[in-house]
Image 1: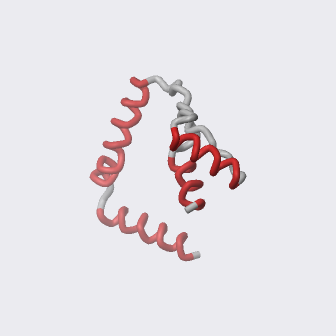
Image 2: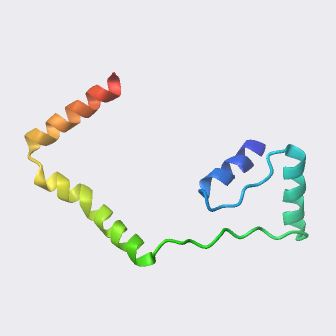
Image 3: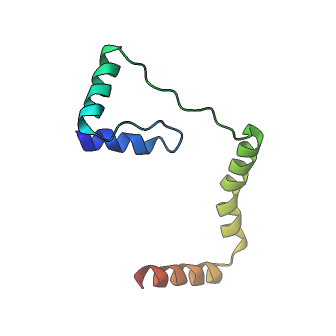
Length: 89
């Protein structure tokens, strides 16, 4: 159970506030959150430009398909063989 709670801290990424590592302090904070004595800390606001994020995502969505379309089947096969060789080294 404790491992699951710690794992949740890593899922949120770097913006999520950290919980105590000490077992007793962690238990105390969970009880306080459950009983309403303490509130869940809010993560800091993102400083990223939303327009830049949208533009980067748009390019990322197109990138792989466009590259695959531009490559010949022979070249794609060469790339795949090279990648498999590196994985098995």
